[in-house]
Every structure is written in C-alpha cells, then in structure tokens.
Amino acid sequence: MARVVDRARDVPGIDRIVVATDSEEIVAALADREVEVLMTRADHESGTDRVAEVAGHPEFAGYDIVVNLQGDEPDMPVGAVAGAIARAAAGDEIGTAAAPLDRALVSDPARVKVVCDARGHALYFSRAQVPYLRDEADLASARWWQHLGVYAYRRDALLHVTKLPPCLAERMERLEQLRALDAGLRIGVAFLDASAPSGIDTPDDLAAAEARWHVTVPGKR
Image (cartoon, rainbow, N blue to C red; front, side):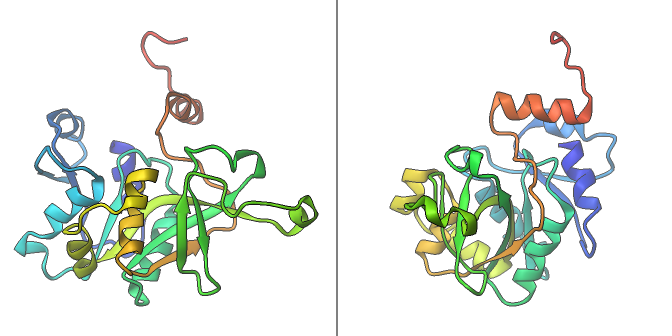
C-alpha cells in the first residue's frame, strides 16, 4: 500500500490523497507515510463501494472527480492515472485506461480485456478473449487491449452507480465496471503506447512484483 501512496503522489494535479481501508494493519503500515487514512465499513463488496463511502462524506462534496487507485496496483503507470482523469475531466462519467496486450496473454482470465468504439468509449470488458480472432488471416491487424484497474469518476456518477445492484454480466465476469456500462454510463478509455504490469491478483503476480522490486520475502529464497 505504501507503494501505491507513493505512486499517487507522482500523478500531477492531484488535490488530496486519502487511503480508504477497513484494515488496522494497513493503518499501521502507513504510520510513517504522512498520508490521510480513513477507516470504512468492512462489508463493502468492491473497492469502488469503499471509495464511494468516503466520497459521500459532505467534506468531499466540492471535488468533481474522485480517483480509485486500488491497493493491489502498485505499478500503475502515472500516465494511466492521468489519462483516466483526463477522460473524466473531458466529460465522460468514468475514465479508465488500457495498454497493449501480447497475443500470448489474451486467454489469461486474470488479464481483463476491453473493447472500445471509435471514440474511445468502452463497449465491453471481459476475462475472455475479446475480440475473438476467428480467421488467422486477420492476425496482422489484430490488437488486444488490457484494461488497467484505475478509475476516475465524476463524483455524482460514482455515488449513482454504487447504489445500483450488480448486473448479470458483472456477477458472471466478476468485473464491477460492467455495472456502470449496464446502467448506460460512458466509460472513456485512455490508451497507453506500451504494455504495463498487471495488478497483484495471484501468487505469480506477487512473485513477479517482488522480482521487479528486488525484494526478498522472509521464508522465501
């Protein structure tokens, strides 16, 4: 989490950084980081719901855009966060980001794919291979985009979508952003030029992150 806080501080134009958590362990880990920490309820189903609890406080009413930079995304590119914010600032209800995905990884369900229209608005997110390559003859022009788990919400859109029940596609894919699409909200996508590390969702992801950081975990070799 400390790495995520440091990454947030690298993003230009951020007015306020708040760590929203229900974990006393995280509070203790950030004791020397001089960052604002707010305790939330422990029954939230998603990080977006947790962020909405904080954003709903009257003291945050003056903020037009609320960014959800998740605690399992310590290597989120600064450009992805800034790009998501730019999409929301330009009028999209939600901004997010995507990076090119190697074909060898398109079938990995841990790599969420996004398909967009010509204006950069998300049409669908999936753990499956979308778009599907039916004919190998089209491989030369085929391209897949990995969704990067950062969201910049217009505050009213955030408070609206988190009051809605999960939709069927969200429950099936376990992807909370599908609730917003189902409700008709526009999700604008900022596209990066280069691939980006995935979030830390699996033991393999953690091992890869430790290797990047040159960290030795006690009990491991």
